[in-house]
Amino acid sequence: MIFLFCILSFVLLFFFFYKDDRDGRDDKDDKYKENYIYYKKRKYPKVYIYLLCFNEEYVIESTILHYRRKFPGCVITIMDNYSTDNSVDIAKKYNCIIQYWENDIEKGKISEHMYRKLKNNLWKEHKYKDAWIITCDMDEWIEIDWEELLEEDKKGTTIISTYGINIVADSKREDLKDIDLSKENKGYHDNDYSKNICFKVPDIKEINFDIGSHTISPIGNIKYSDKKYILRHMNYLGLKYLIYKLKGRHLRLSQENIKNNWGVQYTNDVEKIKTSYNEAAKKIKKE
Image (cartoon, rainbow, N blue to C red; front, side, top):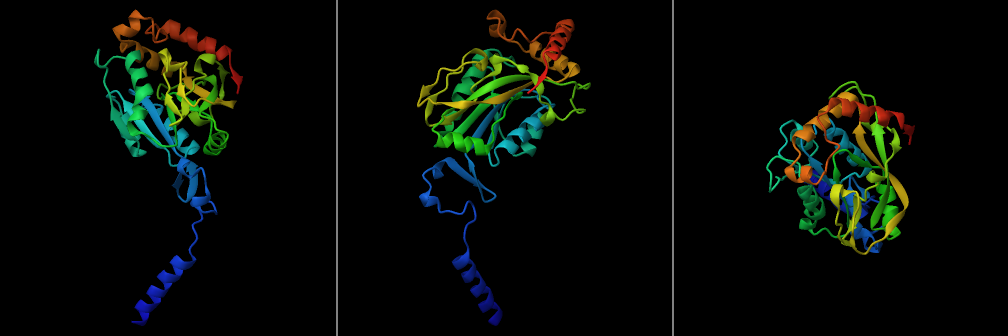
């Protein structure tokens, strides 16, 4: 009986004196509380990330870890086009949600029509309230962290402005295992990759990505961030990798893409790929 009395007393005292240490203040006094999640007793903005995927086993782990570091507690959905490599297994290891999709016109082919449909609509299905959305390709890494996102939130920002950088690395392996992608920061500015991949809902009702997702025609409460955050395009990571990547995507080009001259960078001409890589290397400057 004495033992049970001591246990009961301890429990009562714990609940009486316990103070939540999430940020030292009561949620009811926080006008931004619906914008937050609590992860390991820290306050973070709600961030939901959608990553397009087909056979991305060489980069998917680095991409997932990049976004996990930037936004603790974020929810990552892999929009997978039925990968045949280990991409899905890697994503599951990091507790990502897997959502499969297929080209509704040409099965197994790259379709700009489907890419735009996914990026413009998939996030709407969940009817998020006061959350940030990032929707992008697997090789696009935005350089904004959770603290900066909270500050932008408080300024009323609803679309993050970016400054696109084509990253150029010197991996000698197709699988990139001889380099640390998180440390690769040399490249050159490419305005085509200054994409607005991060935006706030429900302020933004429609994002309306155009061809290649290079531009948007948003609808809603639109306020771009004054600061431009670097968006790393992890493309020219090594010649062997680039040949593997571009030849693979060339094989998957749909008739829609070919007819409209979309995805012309995807080629099976090794000499053209070598020329493209070498030209990119000449433009390098540390960003």
